[in-house]
Length: 317
Image 1 (cartoon, one colour):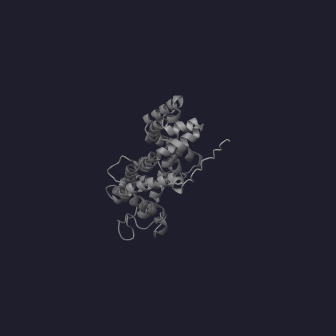
Image 2 (spheres, helix red, strand yellow; image 1 turned 90 degrees about the horizontal axis):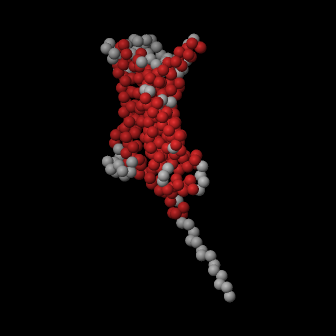
Image 3 (cartoon, rainbow, N blue to C red; image 1 turned 180 degrees about the vertical axis):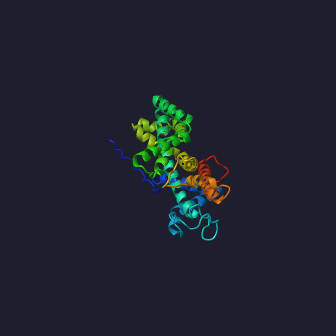
């Protein structure tokens, strides 16, 4: 008589086992957030940055004066109805600074998205594909690094501005063009960082397993490799905001950045540079806001870098 071997009944998968990945990911993010909020400088920077964003995008709608209001009194000193004083045509400088900060932040956000996205994609392709693709992208990065980003962006914005003025006979809005030009000249450091990380990650076991299962290159890069670089991506995107604010201010100060009817903090400084000794508040107040944005974002970037770094001992989990 032949023995019939019945299949061994498998115990049902426990809910804890099925939710292991989700729970682990949740705990990891909780540790990261806990580290970040224990970084006092980062928390202070985040509070300042959020306050500046709210002031820029909401403050103008509740302030009693608009940036279009003129003839409110020339060169009124700060205080009373005008906390930041007034300018040479009687404009309220508080309203002008809020509007300038709004444009500066818009430019910085666009630059961060473009520079980070372009740098991540090109760096990942160079690191994973290697060979002639890596050589081509790396040489292009080297070429872009040799040419100063400020000079390239200034040349492109100036030429576009002159071409537009020649065609239309007037000055149109150009803040988005400035943001695009700065973004397309600010991605190289991100690309080099991501390339180095991908070169290491492509040799890991989970990538080899995905390759052995026949996963296409696009899935391996964007599904398996790049999620393991999310900490570097977030930190670089944060720091790109601060760099964009400073670069835009430099371009606008020398007259090659944002042009009227748009404005920015750098343009406000440029328009009032001749008032430096006579009416210094017109120069220093926009300058202080540029410094506040840059410092607060850099503090946030430092906190994120420490929070994502598992080797960091200065800020405990």
